[in-house]
Image (cartoon, rainbow, N blue to C red):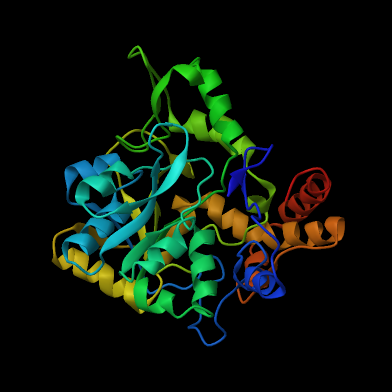
Length: 372
């Protein structure tokens, strides 16, 4: 995987692919197709397969603070390691020697997991070392974006090692991956030179936490989440993310998100103690959460599924209009990803017609000029 001129990760072929390789890529790549198992349990048209909905947080105060919301993903990772259900956790962390780059990390301890805690709103490829990890013969949990998890589910259909060695798939709700140029724009707004950067985090160390850049001379520059994500980073999303129907991790065992408190009908980004939205999507995920609660790793409270709409209005709107965006892309480019059994028609019925149409027209205009 290499950064493109647009600042997004793209696959680079190291040699000529034979027809079988091409067929495998087309079968596995979530950028090409997504579909739920036809025999799976019925799922919610917006929020996907759900066993149970909760809010919660890590009981470990440091994990809760370092995580992007309530630290539940990190707490589950630590629990799996300490209960020896997995040998390691594959997850994204800051690259050694480059505070702006991401790398996949093999976490074996609580300290490793803490190093990887917090959101990284920049290109990341948690499957980059998958073959290496599978070749160890060890069992591991994977923490990834919704598309990464979907790719593993696709791969599991043709590679039996996935079922044997990757028993837990953890994800988080995703609003799209910004180009690295978004991070550069954020640093420019903070007045920090990239060549003088010692460390950088997008958020965490509180909830939602501040974007925080530390220069080599120790100077600190910060920006709140509403401004860093809401006015800079989200303007650099790659096009494929804009037509993605799965921002909520529908293929994961457990998916977490910010359980935002509301104010005047919108999420309130005031700093406070972190709280995670926790959705279990499979029997494996539900069992894991129950075990973690009994072990004292997390605390949770049940939540009505209708409350997710208020906590995650962006994801609600996104699922409702994505069919219009998809059709517009197909009309403009003659091709678009294939989505099956994701409830897109039902989801569209909940959208206001004018909003749905405006999204379709906007996508049609953008689809010609933007990279895939």
